Length: 505
Image (cartoon, rainbow, N blue to C red):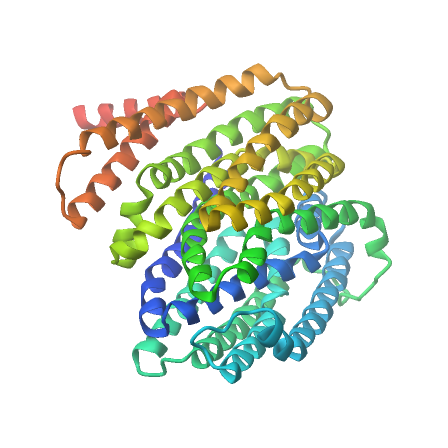
């Protein structure tokens, strides 16, 4: 792996892991000081944040792709700045409109959608209005992220991400700990930190854009050139949001706010895997876009195999560990067996679905790099049409756990449809090689975790001992996976030889 790939991949993974870790660490404090009902309202905000991103209309990956393509051609600095300014204006306008509409709709949502439980009606309305303000400040972040990622400033973006996430989540926990133990104060702090983050990102992008003798101008005509790709990405974004958020949207209506809080805990835990997926996508997509701009099919296949195996190594151990030890992990996390027994099985099922979904990250990146959005769009529409009745039926008859089972079933179907079509119509890669790589990489890690679970099945360990045991098994499984991956094995062997050579001198 090249130095640039290593640095960007490490920064994306560390930024994602840090953001997830801060949220996971602070969640028990949120639950303790706010209560499960109010935390369920925070879960509703996280769901709405994902829903609102559908109004991104494909502009974030479009921004990423176009900025990466500009980086390959240094004589288009003026066009780069002008397109950036036009896209930035679109984001701010959409964010302000959507945020204000959410604020105006807060009384209706509080009355006709959410089941308030122990929360007062006034408290609910005020919290929802603060969510609207948060949406205004959060929405443009997608643009700044896409632009900085595409321009190759991934380390810079993740540095900002780490600092602001720490201030946002730890600061919110501190606000609650200091005595302001209400959901309104919680969201006021979150909104203030969101404003700080978007301001810092705005300054960072201005300095990252290539210098030009003339100031940037808002030329909306530049958007016409990229409309077809953006439209395809918009459709994919809409149905991807529905595919990933339908369960939460429907369960927020079908379940009480308390039991929706339990489901939110499970979804929050498995969402850490999505952060790994997104960090890998953000690392490889600009590189694949540059390769696609040069129409180099040989390098595309080479990069496709390498990135697929890197994805399996980074995501596989975390996902398998959550699948195998979910209840105990939740117990270590929140500190209550009663909650862990409910949340653990749901988290395991969601983790399995996220693992299967993650295997599609690299095929999607290749499709989008070549501007081929129809395949991903049509398969996502098909899966969404299956998911809506599936969630309703399973939730009504089998509760939250039944609804969670729909996710891995659909992701398995997605793999069976999308991977072979990607190989056939875009990169001309044989399915056997991909299946062999996946089997050689993931299967040994699964076996390692099965053996690890059998070894402690009848052993009584403290939570600290279990945590250390899980960490050691995670490291062992990762090393086994690297040693099994065809393209990563030489990299590991080289490091081992250098280590042994150094130790012998």
